[in-house]
Length: 105
Image 1 (tube, rainbow, N blue to C red):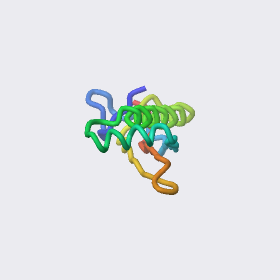
Image 2: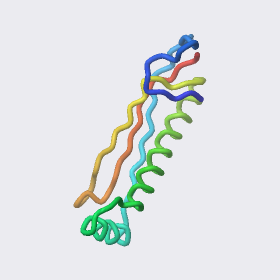
Image 3: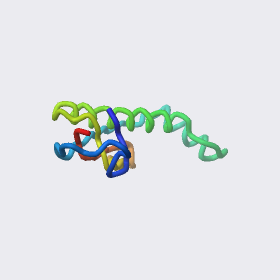
Image 4: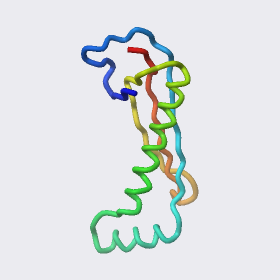
């Protein structure tokens, strides 16, 4: 399945618009990751564990969105937007949401 942030796919005109599709994932951060992230914040550098959680949540949200598009008969999702939000007490949860238009090209 083609997934793109653009509103069209070069050389593949949209034959049918099938509707808006979404994928949402909420990931929790655990205490051990928080401790290591705090150490990273103190000494500088990137927080690899948080980056792993973020990447996995993004991949899962995109996969969920694609599954919903397939269920509608789509072979592409165009105009994809990915958003990130921090939720919960003291920002303990991360939400990744993907939205796009399911189409047949």
